[in-house]
Image (cartoon, rainbow, N blue to C red; front, side, top):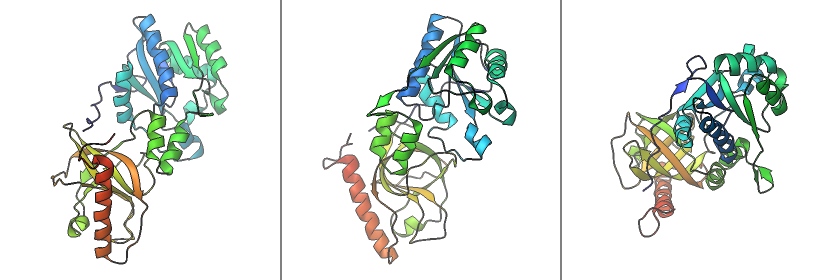
Length: 322
């Protein structure tokens, strides 16, 4: 079985708390795909070449579009998930710069002077070639290079990565999730897509149908796949991975007025999970949401879903597939 994701090891800090001087990878890095990792590797290399610089990832929270356009921005990786993913890459700290109106009004020169020099004492900076900064996104990579080098920093600008004629991007990963294409999302991420939730007390509707479920409370800022029924791996914090069938979305047959929810039924296991944290790794959507004529018809479909999930996850030999 696949191991549970590691516990976060690197610290999450504000600019005022950051260990300095720094070698910075600067950007949103949502999804930490291969293009992001190339920028991060440049910052880690700069820190290796100049002992004393702390290899650091710097991102903005909330996303600038949330502040400037009022546009909700669901994240592929929440801050604690990003910590887990950054530690193996050689990063020593994750710094989140609070993004607000006052920060958005800084000119490119003031951003470099106040944030990169004044707060983070950057000695080296790495960005992607599409990086924009400063008021109205008026600064680009060459502006950053000019301003930073004048302040004594080295600057690395990394080209975007091409993938099948298009660049690898967080938007493509979100689109794959919206289409329930977990295989494509995992390919672009170069790792399985996962989300985490706290098991909370439910109403026992699944148990009444003969299919007890763990009801997960998931951070509302997390980007989730399209609604539907999925085969999924459930990772416990003790390292155990359990095959499951997951319902993501509404409950049109049981309670059509209820809000969207995340429920997982463990295959062939009955564990007391209330109050525990689970990491869910959906692998394939089995079907979309449906309304059934009766609870008996729903229970029969859940049985078929469970059999389908078992086959896809464990195969005919009962061993983990993939």
